[in-house]
Length: 388
Ligand code: DI6
Ligand code: FE
Image 1 (cartoon, helix red, strand yellow):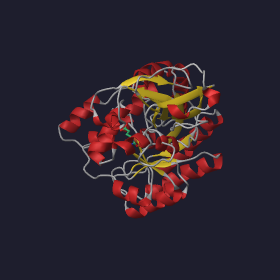
Image 2 (image 1 turned 45 degrees about the horizontal axis):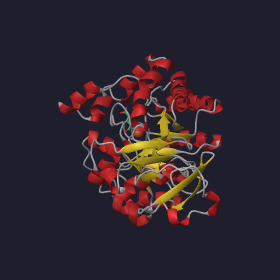
Image 3 (image 1 turned 60 degrees about the horizontal axis):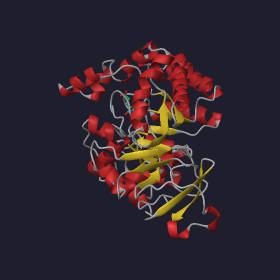
Image 4 (image 1 turned 60 degrees about the vertical axis):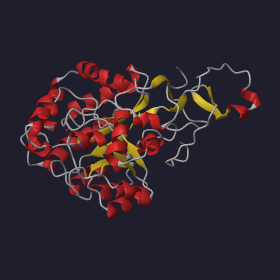
């Protein structure tokens, strides 16, 4: 996957040499350097080895569930109507505020384990269901604890600008100034923030409001990313590109101008087919324009209780192929090398000397099988930091 090109190179009868948690060498078995001869070796019996998968966009830390809203949508209500009526993100905010830090961790681990069980070795986790200082910090502390409780690397994104909480209804700027920005400062001071995210949408924050958050991120030296153009086109991706965003995410309503801005900024397009599927959207993300302008695409679960209650990255890959017409090779690049880029990580997501030895070993013969099957987990084992 080193080139990031759609076609990763498959090496038949390959060898991956690992020392001290990193990849020391990889290549065909016929070309093993003399220095590696005599090392302990495991025979993987013809299995496929890929980089460990990276889920680069999740809201996996959250309290409660929204099964009732699922029923309401089946009875005809829309996602936006439910949100405007005080359900949606705000109902998860209430449940997340009510949960203790330990309870939140316990509720989240089964979802994390489902991802790990499918070969995930790096996981992004957002805050954004607290919307008060204490709960935003609580969510991010839980995210960090997940990286201690399980063999998975966690990257956090501060998403205080996810929704306007009820106590600030109709006063988004006051919420940002009085709660969101102080929470960001406090979280950053505690080392809890790897990137800063926002939700730019009619039911959330305008581009002008997102600027307040991005300016503070910039002052703190933190990279930004943005939920943009999910339900409408407000120019969010273009704004994010202006700030050199690592990624813009969702993007169904993005136009060519926005695609070009992302290309210039080298922002990754993170596609989230689980939300598209769950909300029965019909507007497809501009995949052809991403290819044409050389914007790299990543695929993630968006694991969240409302619009994407999905804890399977393999299913997200399948959905990206079937719903968005992504190729299986693009889907694999989208959950490895390009997902790493979307998180600003240079040390993982491909199999090359010096990279972390985070690998997934699969009971398949060809990479396309990972995206092709539905509801079938072909993982044999993971290697995390050089350890089975
Ligand atoms: N877009 C999403 O898909 C999630 N957040 C966001 O900004 C949905 C969050 C939710 O509905 O709880
Ligand atoms: Fe999201």
